[in-house]
Image (cartoon, rainbow, N blue to C red):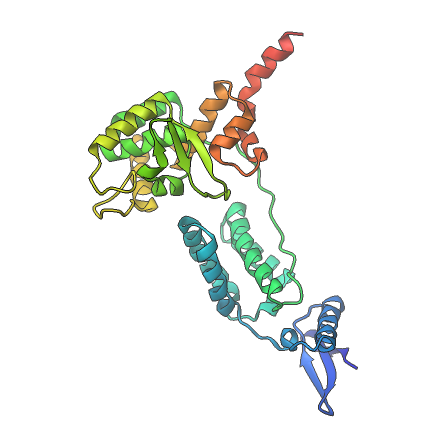
Length: 335
């Protein structure tokens, strides 16, 4: 009968799984930090033997860096291009810390140690959380594939929520007045649709219905299809863009290669350069915040704003709710 053997060494306590295999006593050191974790391995080992399954869990020494390749194949298929590229970027520090360790060796204690190290190196809590969110997804997949006995608890830092950055009317005027034609085209579409960077990149002429005045946004970050009405400003601008487009143009914004959209980096850098020149703080995403803020300030209810933005939950849209404070004051004054 298999059992756990606890051993004291100069470096601390170790746990071993002991069993009789082919008449011989075999002991395997477990990647466990305490008796509770060791017992979990024992239960899994016994369960595998009873169910006549291969005992891969205890003996498995899959390295984190090798399993990451499996995860990336999944990520490339499931996620959009921008999110996949973010995964690639965020994986570099994870591989640096855990790449050569077996999946079993990534523990709650080792994760805490690395988190502390990253914070001490000057990384923001948000960046650390984002890295650990990716680590959590990878370990969840490993757990579901029976490669680890359980997924370690991954601490998450609390982040102070700040009001979103949006552009004032004066800033928008300065941006539009000083932008070169191609950048101005991007900005007008962003301001009047509130779409994400990746959605702007993938926007095709086939998604535009000028007759019924609507834009069809395909499956996006929230994995939902949505429709954005076209207002008068955007209608005039899209008609102008249509009059200028090439015969074989597929996407609203294309580079020199027909049928290929501008890269996200291209217009991100173009807009960032303009903002820096004008000494205006912000980024491309702030145009999405500006779209939402203007709607709320004009009296559009938060549920409709949430639908237009394509948020998975209206709770995400609540960051704009404070802009309705004046309406609340007016409501109270009616008493």
